[in-house]
Length: 99
Image (cartoon, rainbow, N blue to C red; front, side):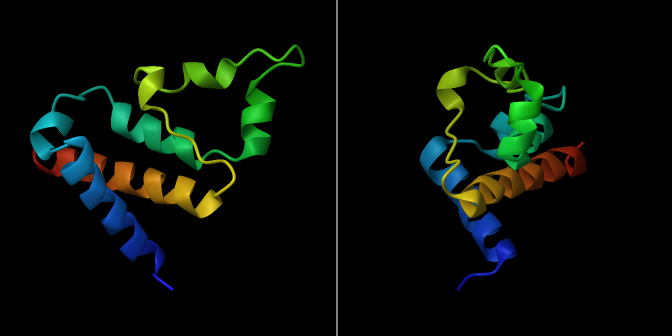
């Protein structure tokens, strides 16, 4: 079984190689979008339910900082959601360190 850090590194590599989210691309996100996307993936289903109201409004989607087509939730796989969150945090750290 892979460790959390191995899973995060694996996902970050996939983001770079398959999605094209390179350091140059990440540098364009100067308003904390990568960290906000990470926070979104890290939210539990209970938190999403809390943010939404009793009428079923999808208020949680307003937290997602990118076009919805880039939101690729896997709520049935909590480890996968946290893997994505960790990789986005790593990307944000790298972006900030490059300043």
